[in-house]
Amino acid sequence: QMIQKKYTKNGFTLVEILIVISIFAVIGLLSTRSVFLTLRGAKKSDSLVRVRENVNYSLSVIERQLRNAESVTTCGVSTGTLSYVSLEGTSTTFSCVAPSGNATGYIASGSGRLTSNEISVTSCSFTCSQTDINNPPVVKIVVEAEDSESISVEKGSVSAQTEIVLRNY
Image 1: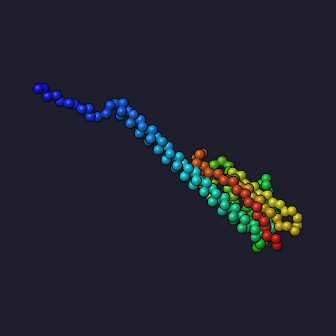
Image 2 (image 1 turned 135 degrees about the horizontal axis):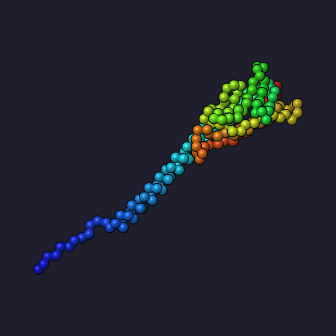
Image 3 (image 1 turned 180 degrees about the vertical axis):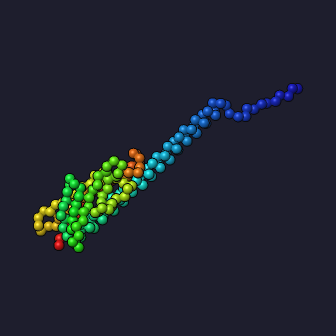
């Protein structure tokens, strides 16, 4: 009798290997894309927080100074300046400095910056009103700012406005 050896196929065909490689490639692409989008979202969130903190800080400084001011002397929507006299009798100015060239726009108190170099104030205005002599003056401030360090999609921008009622002395 003749002894027959059975040969079994161990291994994979070329088609099976190509299918497995393509499945892993698709899974790799999808997971890489989701990680990339998550990182982009985190950068945008950090950018928004940075801009919002800067704008809120500058508005709180202005509010604290104006609330205790004796009077508002100049309020220019077109010039972007607000002059006031403090309770001690000192004349001081808040101003919106527009962006020019490579310099970012910012909000200034006197000659000092209230916003950092990390953000650019793109729009800023002061509007003053007083209904009559018996009511205190009201100052409305509108600010728009954006992150100056981030790129297009990750760039955070914030719009904020507040109304400050001066104390009636």
